[in-house]
Image (cartoon, rainbow, N blue to C red; front, side):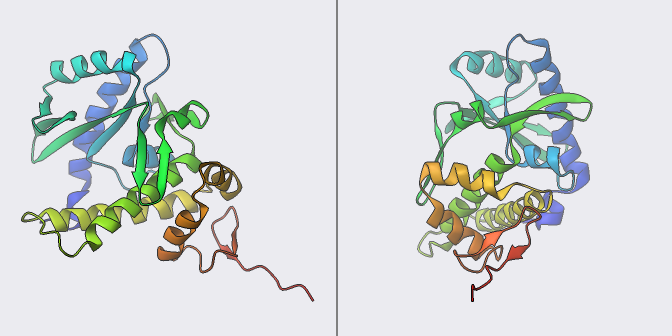
Length: 237
């Protein structure tokens, strides 16, 4: 299996980028709100360092049929055992669109994040000369920490026998999650706003534990400055 540098090599992510740009052009031509793009390409929109292979979009019921039609017209086919995943072989890679229902949740151990939070926590950015709707940095950070938590827990379950190459792929996805989280924090994600969302959803302890595991904070009692440096609370005399 390739390592993370090989898995996300620019010549490969550029193929995915070209497909994303087609999708954005199609979205622009449609009436109504832009379809939100989440995951790795949303991170790249804020911090253009590591591209992605997968294209993750969040669909309302009204957007689902037109989006499936767009994908099928452009050579994508639904995966047999996962009807919300569309695949196409292009060059050396298999490109993937993940169609996420708007009324579902992003989940991990102790965490449930409704995707419809995008109603209040999304932004339109200019991406490669086109408009793209993405989560705010703060919601995206929470989503990426959740993805990390879910994948890391899966990798830790020792009794699972992964198919050949799948464990290595999972480990590379975890490494990518870590890089995405660091890049979002370094780009100035506002931790005050982040914790407002976390506290409303009621999983601060789980969120802090994940940040602690990632080495971002050392104890739950510490606060995090907007520039992502750890700030120790000074002891009062």
